[in-house]
Length: 441
Image 1: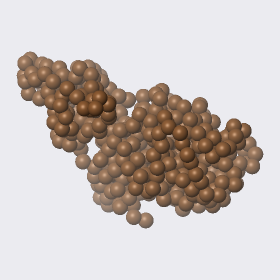
Image 2 (image 1 turned 90 degrees about the vertical axis):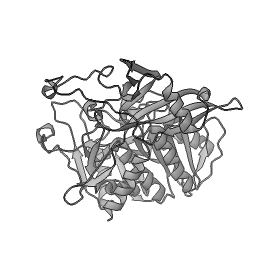
Image 3 (image 1 turned 120 degrees about the vertical axis):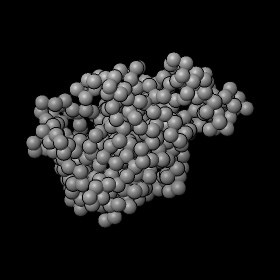
Image 4 (image 1 turned 45 degrees about the vertical axis):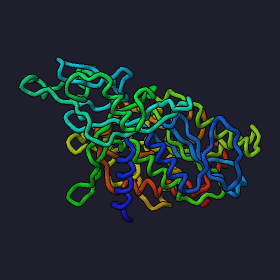
């Protein structure tokens, strides 16, 4: 198993994709190279058995699918991950001036970041710019200003003696990035227009986010760890994409989902709490001339793996993890469960993942929160509110989730690819409401 080669490929993927827009564009490009055809939601679809397709929504979410040639029974094998990560978003009127000597950018927090990790490190801007073309059309352009552009400076300890005793960061005061010297109005628009080789007057709007310029790395005594920004959840997005494009698919419709806005609750047209998945699955069925009844039967016979990272035991704070359901980096894919259903895994879906892991030859771990701590939520239950499918929540163990710079194990990306490839290559047959057979696709 070449853990290092896969990790390098994954780290390169993450490094090249500083925002959800870049992540989805990169996945779409990989799919096109693998022979997938793009579909538009606003146009009529014409699908065929054996066909490979993808559809994007908002440029920040994607659903791709492969229609098997031998659909003796209609069902879906689905994975879901998310494209977004906590960051800071630039406001519309972005430039703030201080003392006639500094220009800062006015930003607001996106998601639940660890604020202190964004201080005193080189940052830049990336996202999309909405541009008016000479023919009057309005187009979206990706932008990544590939230079050390911004920095959020800490206050010196001499001026804040209590900083090491705990500090509550005010996002409107403490976390505005320094952009330039002096007071220069519209200098950000000038920089963007130069980067895109357009006139400043052609810029209609932007969705720009800060990102860290810290390089991705493999480290540790035996090179056992990997670190970079946005491991949550681009590590799972990358693994899902690899497995999806490499798996053999004949008897199922394999589906890859990567949703935006998980970090802020998924309540958008492109989030998991939208009709995106429902719309796509239904259009597939109807386009292939299946009835409403057959569509409902297909959902009941389908299975989904919601892939989002999990908390590894912290080396300095092992007491924060559950005593018996704790997970470690480099020890395999994680199955996440929660009695109050923050995660979708139950006895049946967990058993299916165990069997898939056994067949894939990869280690499996089990995560639950300490009973006196609240759990975060993820994609599984949110998506299932619109498209009810049997599901398990899985992920990869990592440290410092929602830090500007996160850490994981060098082995686990490949373990996830192997598990998902086994899943995509399998037929999971529903015998009754709680009985399944798993056979090779």
